[in-house]
Image: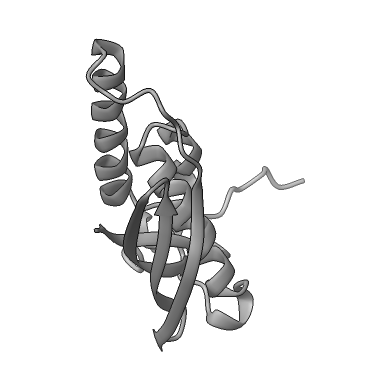
Length: 143
């Protein structure tokens, strides 16, 4: 009876980097939900974080790290002002007034959202990219 011989497994580690294999994967538009509804929800949530009405970690999975850093920093600033007594105590709800979306490429949506926060009206521009089967905010501008 011959002894056991273990063969070598041919694995090519040069074909793809860890980031390509395990990092975020692009998702086609056909596999994503309606971007209009998502743009409205994300703009609403982000403005709530930036005005101190919502904790920043609630939007971490829906934003890229760069966008999250900006939103969280702004939320922390508002929280510090509130703690020192420099912020106003009135809390107004955020209401979505209008959403316009265009899709310049497959799996990419750009949106302009008009929100009302108390007496103030804000414009939010955001870029959504399809990653891992969901929309993520990859660029954000709040006016």
